[in-house]
Length: 153
Image: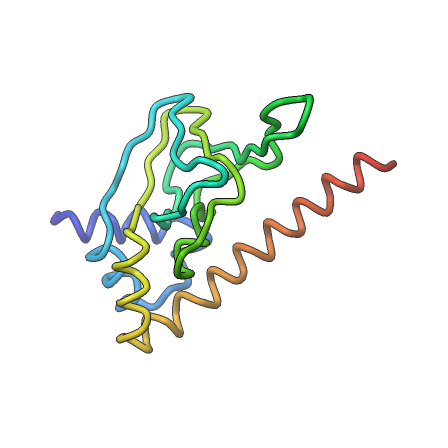
């Protein structure tokens, strides 16, 4: 099995990738590479430029934000199929949270500049990817709202 086929197989086992058209899966696999992260490894740092877009394939990541007088606080867990660094799709984007591996993890990681160029030139890729990214952001907003409700009840 070649590397792209392996990546596509992993994507196909996630909520994010399973409904992508085969040509979109193939394009994402060709644009990115599989990266492994160790527990407590910092992947993105809050406030720094967000230069990579990732789809978590296995493991778990924590999104943490710095709260004055409390330090870093985990605000959300990223599960397989969820995305991180989605703001890298935007030019000159800044990471809004710190992303840290909480267990051994693997992700398909794509350079933001490369992805932006591909999305601009390949309308099929853009039409396939943007709705999934918006679904991921909506899921994250919903989870955050639920957490806020827990704080106030």
